[in-house]
Image 1 (cartoon, rainbow, N blue to C red):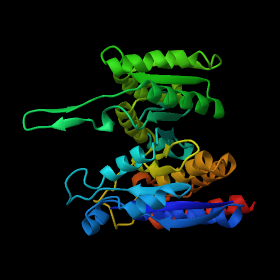
Image 2: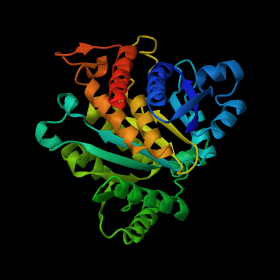
Image 3: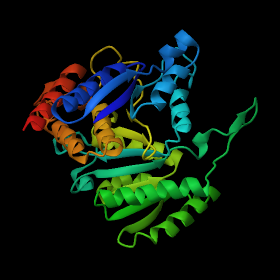
Image 4: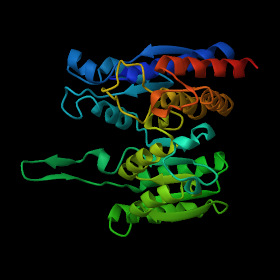
Length: 354
């Protein structure tokens, strides 16, 4: 099963964490029926400095002709805000990647790293945020003037229907019994349309429990009782905020993966963290979020839940033996980015050989 994977290493610590995720792809290729061809597709701040664009046409053509995209992180401190990062929006909009899938799982090995008291963690944290990825405020329809700025919060029926249906189907595939919708329907007209469509679609999934929560209340409940949530579906801006909040509950922003997905088409997989220029080149960045993004790639783009599960188990096994600085433990050795990647790769190799 030959698959072409475009590689965008990005800026800052992006290349460091992508290198470790590539090790996982190599292990999968060596010990399964998958055969991966990796093709470079440069984008970001360093590319902008060299070519005057953050997403060269050649790179985008490579991405569009691939089976999936493994993406690092974009952004440099010596460039104006958005100069590099806007390439992400170009890819999301250009490929119509309407699903932003963000699993949030607290591994037992990292339970002590969760900032919540044990009573709030409950039986554990294992939820997935399904974020609409192409509409809302991030569609960036608006204007900036000297004394006024505006952005239109655009929701369409088509956009709402397809992301909400995806969330229910995701819940079915993963054995979730509840889907939570997050909106601001008491104030915002787009949220009122969202809520109506959510209830209409929920009628086709009578075996799944549903609930509506306002965004401000959800942010509170995510701290008070995160164990109560399974599949959470929400709009673009709300999803961005709550997924970053949730990431800190699982030990570190460096632990959180994501997939920018259009089912059946080329999709992009990346950690949710930024380029972290303050730690770039120091060998301390956490590669787990990027490695778990490969897990999502295997499940969502290549339809291999079995291999995805093995990657997940390899991460869980590795966390028992060593950690990067952001999730360090007094009892375990603190590892560099490369050492953490090697540890997970070796754990995965052992599991796939077995």
